[in-house]
Picture 1 (spheres, rainbow, N blue to C red):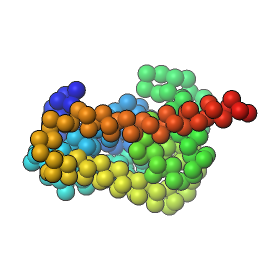
Picture 2: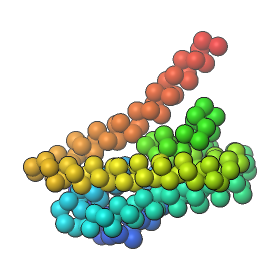
Picture 3: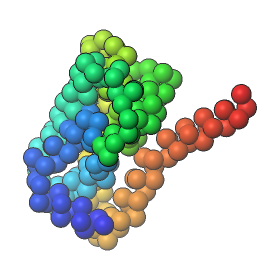
Length: 200
């Protein structure tokens, strides 16, 4: 599978990576797109000379911040109507409710935490807009989260690609670990919520 992702990233180049990160960050139909694995693999490819790392990192951070900003604007305009929208191929109401639950618990910090959580990452800025968080406050959390995620995961791939001999032989297990870590928080949250529901 990692070869497919590597070849995909090579085929789409800078613009494709930018668009995927942008869509996955704040467009509700982008929740199924690769996020962490895309950034890590793109960083790895930069270590192999396929991308310029500074250009790639800048594009990923900007795409992440802009994507969330669009998600916020969308949430502010039509977000409340989404809670009554039926499920479709490109929209799952449960993902929105999950992001809303995180927002209710963590407030603006959700925008940082959610960066590292698939599904919640896409819907968190929409929820922030729906909840009418002030844009100044939103932008501060958005920039911090965009830097930590867009730069952090990409840098991880770049550094490992430069320091670990034959890292390309271990990309599959590394990506598996990244995916496991990224889905662990929402899984633990669901388990905790069900445990709390049983007690109440």
